[in-house]
Image (cartoon, rainbow, N blue to C red; front, side, top):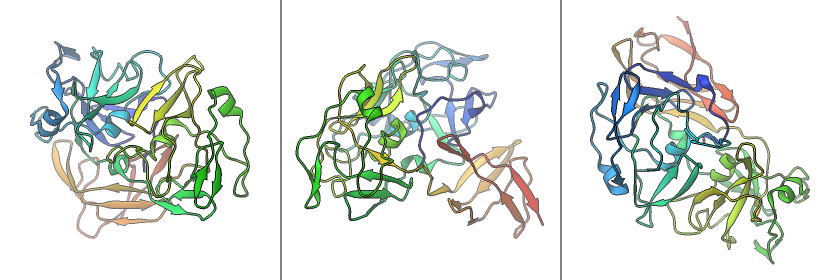
Length: 351
């Protein structure tokens, strides 16, 4: 699973020179203008159109020589957020003349109400309509949509194999008894939650999760509460604090597992679910796709690299346009990029 939730560095983007940009962290290609705007010179001109979630799912659009543009999922929209910003939480160098409003995702989910994101505040909430920024999969980013894979450790904790993070199965303040959390949870401010020290299941390194870590256990495709009901059974519904702050403030981002929303509300008290361990992605997966390198069409097949460092798969082309002969061996190296896994891979070719 791919995590996010930190600053968006300048080298995270490739300007393709045609009104599109490729996010090197996820491999997704984005239109630099919202749908309804025109890309003129190096700027977005005009006013975006408003679309509903169902309309975003059915959109058909041709731009920059591609006809496979689609509405993004909410996780894809979140992957280009600069959590920690204080105004327009998106890279305005890549998305000039960014229109202020909510941007809609293409998934309606079980509630029949889609989700959208407000890039002014990096807030996520249920939205019926909003502006639409289209995306297409180049090397794809299936890790953004990868579901948590929990292992019950039998001691009131569970480890997510997709991130290697271990979670307390109950809300802080409760007691683990009879396979469930019992009692009243604490309601803590960010400052209190950040400094809270807790020992449980033989470990004393429990901590407040980042917004990316906390979002990794959210499942917006199920009914409230939006989390695995087996692992987080009898979950206390409410707003859970993260360790990620709005820039130059003590306002922490938090997630409401009752409605799947993300927001920041000053030093307001909230619930806490502690985590321990260091994020390690389970694998990188790229699915079958067509990518254009130097004007040449190259078909790339599935490649999986496990966190152990080993990997296997078939690669038909390189980024410099060379078409590899069948059976030719290549070496690809994956790098961890802060809390993200970068999958624009340098290649060293070996015959």
